[in-house]
Length: 481
Ligand SMILES: [Zn+2]
Image (cartoon, rainbow, N blue to C red):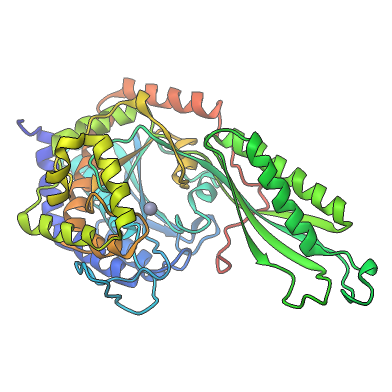
C-alpha cells in the first residue's frame, strides 16, 4: 500500500526522535516506580516535553506526578494519555527471558506502562510536528496520568475538568495483538468497611462483648449469598484489612474489610455497591456493632468510541504490525516458554479461538503478532478487568489502540512482560503505537463530521455529561496506597 503523505511525515518524525523515546522507555523501565510515586519517571517525560516546546503544568488534580504538556493554539484540541507506573515485585532485566530482577523484590513494568507513556509522547510530538509543518491550527495535549495500577488518576483528572477542553483523545496499551478492541472493561468501586464493637474476655464474659470480627464474617456470608442474584459479568471481591487481632480469648472490638465490586456499566456498579452496603448494615445489626463505609476508589467502564475506532483502525492498517526479525521471534518464544503448563494451555486456547487450530504450531513458534486484526465494533465483550481510562471515555470521545509489544502467550502483570517491555520487542511496539496514534489524530482532525459524530456518541454514552462515580470528598490516596 502506498504510504499517505501524512504517514510519511509522521514516520520521519518518529524515526528522528526514536533514540530519545527509547532512552526514555529504558529509564522509566528501570526506575519502575509505584502508583503516585512516579517522580523520576514523570521527570523523564516532562523534560522531553519542555525540550519539544510544550508548556508543562505539574501537580494537577491533587497528585504530584500528574501533569500535562500543551503545544499549539486553537481548535481542534487533541489529547494523548500516557501512563508510567509500575507493579510491585516484578523487577526484571530488559530482554532477559530468565528470571533476573534488576533489584530483588523491587517493582517492575509488568503491564508495560514504560512503553505506554513514551509511545504516547511520541504521538504528541509527531502530531505537533505535523501541525507545524502544515501550518495548521490545533492544540496537542499530553496527559501524564499516574497510578493506573493503583487507585487511578484519570477519574480525578476528569472530575477536575482536565479533559473538558479536548475534542478527542487517543491512547494505547501494550498488547500481544495489533488491533482496535471492541471489548469493554468493567466499572469498579472499592471501599473500606469498618465495624466497631465491644471488647470482652471471650471465656469470662462473652455476653458483654460485641464482636466486630463476627460482623465482618457475616458481611462476607451475606455477600456470598448475594452472588446468586447479581448480573452476569459482575464481581465481588474482598480482603481483610484488619481481622481484629490475633487473640482468640479477646472479643475483637474492631475489624476492617476491603471490598471491590465490578459491573459491566458504571450505573450498575453503583447499584451493586449499594446492595453490598445493605448487607454490611445487616451484619452490623445482627451483631450489635457499628458500621462505617469509606469509598476509596471507583472507575467507570471503558469502551472505545466507535467513530474514533474506525479511524484508528484505518491508521493501524496503514502503519501495519511492527516488523519483527528472527531474533525477536526467538526472544519472544523463550519468554513464553518460561510459563507453567496451565498458563500455556490458556494461551493456546485463546490463540485457537482467534486464529483457528491450524495456525497454532506456527504461532507458538513465532509468537509475535505480525498482522493487524479486523475491528468489529459490534462484536465486543465485557472483560473482567477495569481501568481509569473508562472515566475519560465517559468525558470525551476516546479510543485506545492495541499494538503488539510482547509475545502472544505473555500473561499480564508478570515479570515476563516487564522483561519484554524494555527489550527490542517493546521498543518496536511503542514506536509503531506512536505512529498509529498520531496518524489517527491527523485523520480525525481532517474530518469535522466524524469529530461531531464521535461527540454525539459520547453524549449518548454519558447521558449528556460525565458524572464522576466518586464522591467529591474522596481525594487521590497519595502516600496512602
Ligand atoms: Zn496497564
